[in-house]
Length: 389
Image 1: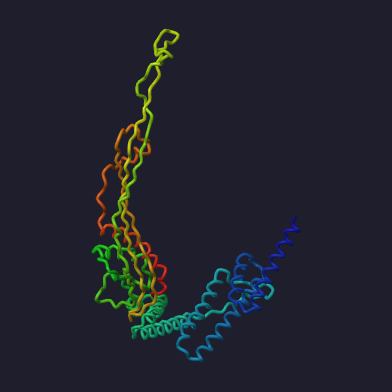
Image 2 (image 1 turned 90 degrees about the vertical axis):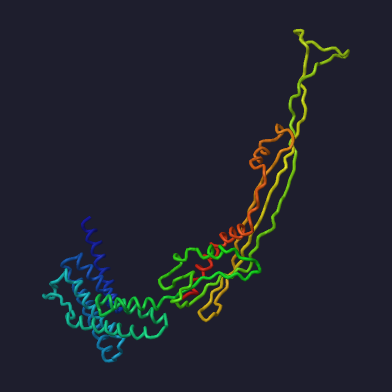
């Protein structure tokens, strides 16, 4: 059992070493470093892992320093940020090995060496990167291009990550954010030949616009004079219809056989027959009763049809999406004429309302249709929000 365990452990060890060596051959020094460090932490005293960790660290260091020297010779200011990130990467790797150093390599009779950058160089690079980002972002804010402002916002955020109290970076972040927002105004316009109920516009603009706001896109339903709108979402009401008041009537008759006294049983001579006890023989009499049920169904429909049109600030139509909302109102009543005992249970249930109802007004039926339109309006905006950048 012990031999099997040792064999299994040896296979894992060889496989791990091969994996790290492969990463080194492929130039994946950071991955090799992470794998070797993990093995060193879990396998104290294993020279091979220590050697591989040192090699990965050294190769990554030389790669980064070579790249930094090239960028410095090139003189491109944007690389100041890249230089800082590479120097910080070297510093990160050195800090990562702190828990395992000194790391003695027995086979070489020495401790592993892990190169680092001094704090002064790292701080200087960080400061240069922050200076560059701040200046570059500030320049982008000179114009009124909101997409440049968004890029400036991201750069100011990086500056704040480098130095939380750098100059007036907080104010600049707010400034860039304000300039980077796309403002959208939602309007309802009646272009149908019908009169729009006064409350319909308010009803349609009470959809959850707050929920549709994103980080860079904000909706308004009331124009703010201090705001320049980048997009307009126009809800053009193309059809407002309150259908005719319909009254449908139906009549049916329920019948039922009921007892109606009795009659004597007569013999052939017309005499009343007697039973075995000498009593007169009788049989029940039946009659048919009837009751008319007159049903009245009142109906009225409403319709609000619209197009949701997306415009740029220059009044260019980007996209148009048709939507509609329909409402249905009905009221059933019934009256019974005749003998109520003839009614079936189903017919009796229809006598809940025996007097017709006043019809809903045209405004009410249109408002009901408008309420049905709201979820379609919201979906139309949500599904096409990508148009509002």
